[in-house]
Length: 125
Image (cartoon, rainbow, N blue to C red; front, side, top):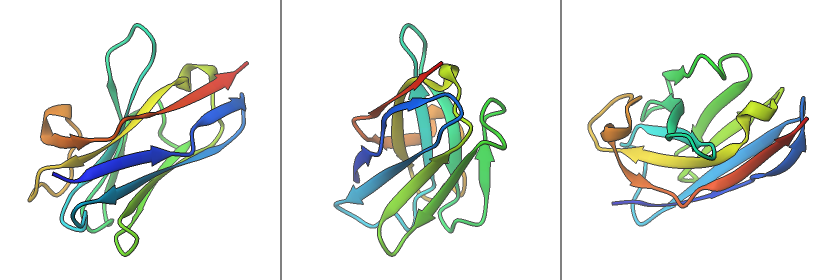
């Protein structure tokens, strides 16, 4: 498995932006589809965004489409989530995850087998 560490979370006002990073170690993520999930207090973890192993394809939850952008830099073994126009309902712990190869693009939680520890994002109204 690959080790993942998220960073970039914090407190931001509604309408603001944050950029999350997910640094991988232990092995290259160049063959892994990657994704971001989030879990709000009292709710189940939900899918946010996914990117194919080569970066050519992305997929977003409807709730974040047009506001969030997932990207990756395989040379840096890092995945990013740019979050714009943040809303209070985006408040959650955000998790980065790596899917089992050779999955091209993964949107379901069971398709992922490596997870980071999460980073807190809080959006104030």
